[in-house]
Amino acid sequence: MMRTGYALVAALLMVLSVSFPGTGADITFMGRSFSPEDPAPDDNITFTVEVNGTSDVSNISKAYLIYCSVDDGVCYPQKEMKYLGGGVYSVDAGKFKEGEWKYNITLLLKDSNITWTPDTHFNVTKETPIDGDGDNNNTTDGNGTVKDNKTVLYVMYGAVGSMAIITLMAVVMVLRMRGKGT
Image (cartoon, rainbow, N blue to C red):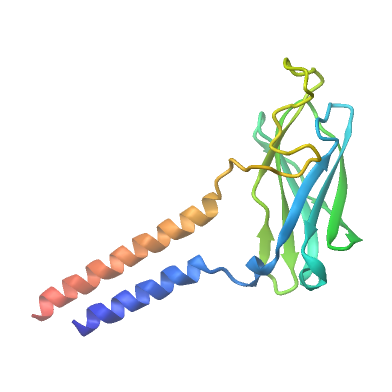
């Protein structure tokens, strides 16, 4: 019975280590946006992210824009963002071809951790939407701030799933050892 208790405590510690990430999770994202809100292929698109206060900024080594064409499945070279002050980073990423795009902001921290925002999708189109409200179905509110996110953080699900499998394997091993010992 004692071995089973130790195995369960070890399994619980492994699961908790995944559930509570390191210092990278200490960064508080206040918002992220892009402008113009409904970009066309001939618009330069500027991306901005704001983190909370100077304590968070002092932990950030670099900020990067990561962006991909959803239509082509092609990701482009990351762009380093410039610190503007007040916890705000920004980059002019240039013009994007027509289609659906996604982006996230990735922060490289001074303690070698990395943290990032969830992916945000937006459309670049030269057509006026059918309803005429200027909404290209981007996942932002009126000023470009993200209002919802449909992208699942698959990395976290994979880590939790892996830990669940390891935990299950540990319990099975303990139960097998317990059966041989009695």
